[in-house]
Image (cartoon, rainbow, N blue to C red; front, side):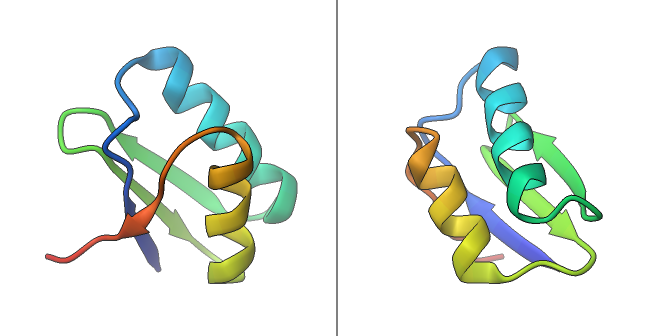
Length: 67
């Protein structure tokens, strides 16, 4: 599982844009977005760097999520 903190994700549109971006690089992965905690979780086969780059390319700032 990959988890990122995305502080500049603030609304449903943001969540949709990030989900779409992640699905483009990891189509089989499950994407969970928690707007309240500004977290994105990706489960399944996905390259962490590719997912991070996809989120950044969508206009957001992904950071490693520390528990």
